[in-house]
Figure 1 (spheres, each protein chain N blue to C red):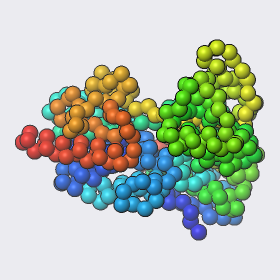
Figure 2 (figure 1 turned 90 degrees about the vertical axis):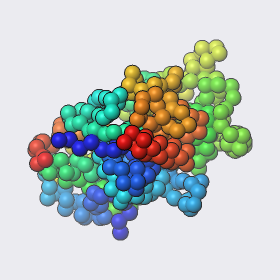
Figure 3 (figure 1 turned 90 degrees about the horizontal axis):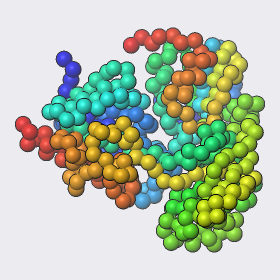
Figure 4 (figure 1 turned 30 degrees about the vertical axis):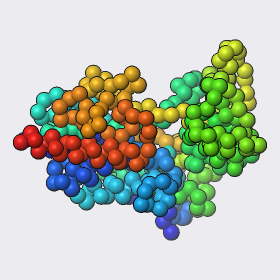
Length: 308
Length: 121
């Protein structure tokens, strides 16, 4: 007979791993099923400097420690899987993988996380790695003495624009609005940098080049006028999308496709909880994901205790 | 000295790289750092290593001078994103990719260039 776990966690980012640490330490049989890289958005962070109690560390290092903690408490982790179907409404919940394997549990914590948003315009896939990048720390040095565009107006975009001035001769920030969403200190730092200039109320429309990125077309939104700009590289920092496409019709989502939860991380389905970057919330940090994962795990434990 | 914290074997010298690609029919090498675009590729390779015994999987630190044969390979000349992932068939580089790749993308390349041998599950 198939094993029925106490808790099945979908996702192995900060929220999922934290939930796994808590439930497995509470002696609840736990499996984490993970579709992406273990660590989720944590491994996208080069340095984590504001995680309380931990001196500046690498994102992957923090993720590895969390993974080890979960495993040491007996949590099973299965990664690089693809989930084909969710059946979450019964007393015993199950998911079926693309290869037909089925996993069952008495409770589920959804912690699918998010992913960097892409522009989805012509040429974006073709020039990924040959001019288009989503990681300044990884790829900045390839653009030494080159001219760059940074797309976005939040903290990541402006902070990474400043970082890229260490390498590039000129960085142009292209943003769709007439103001930035970033914190004031990030705006001031970017604006005071002589290598950075700004094109506001504008969006990129196409990427062009021969083997590598050579130019972009930019639309000025108020006038709808298009202009061509020669450029060596484009770095895209326009926020994140929740990984909840496969949950449409399965669990209640809001207008941004985030899972709707209450303060105890309960979804609209009994015995199903959610945590991390895939839920409806304002702030997305490793610390908030850890908090969500903790609450979801404790709520799941309480649910299992009262169900007996 | 090993610079990458992955479960796959890390090649440390260009001589070792040369020996490996000459002694093995199918070789995949991910040349990168412990960065967000590289780690998902290492993770996929760790799992594929168990499933594809006919292929040898290795990592190599991008910043070591010993990685010059990969960094300077003609197939990688236009690359501007880590990691540089290269595939060798009988000692010859047959495919190279830049930046993050999904497991599906990697499997597609392995299926195209390396004969598939069913894993013993």
